[in-house]
Length: 237
Image (tube, rainbow, N blue to C red; front, side, top):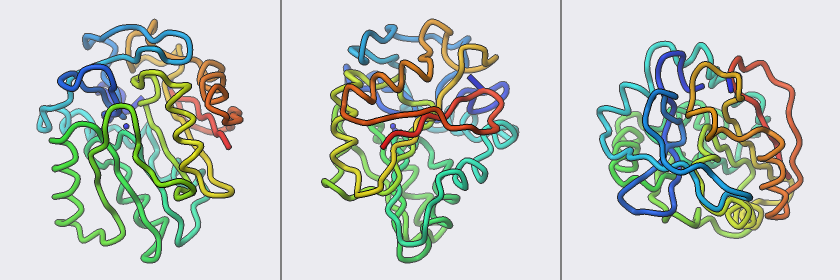
């Protein structure tokens, strides 16, 4: 609230949806047997829409015991090459699955932001942050079409299993570009077509499509070599 998948038998964390306020999407998508919305068009005219307002339901799915096996959160955060003091954003953060790893990586002088459009998930993250004492973390509700990040403020922007949910992705990418600090990077992690989990295959985007859509917003993307079983990683600068 922002293939290789979020979990072997479970869906993935929630993310962004921009068309209807009552039908929200997820950073960390749903299993391919779940129902889905519209297929995305060129440069993300429409994303895949879903309802993520039931926190208990999605918490059980997003943070199931086997998710770490394929999502490899510590490994993925290590790939980001985060330095202490950086500002890092998890766009479509859902229940805050990545926040403990990001909090550790940025250190006490850094900042980890969890952004989502679903208010119930943002409230859950805020309570989780307070309970865990993650003083360098913050959860924010954002509108459907804008990450509301100040210009030049973000060093790393992580988007896991969420990009295909976003409407008008080329225009959205331009807003992400504006938010990047010098040397900043956008990291898109999403399902390959071959993944046994994830959204319906026809709703998945290839890495090449993601690179094209990021390029429409002025970002130059490339596929990053990685060791995730069901997902690809695109890094854009």
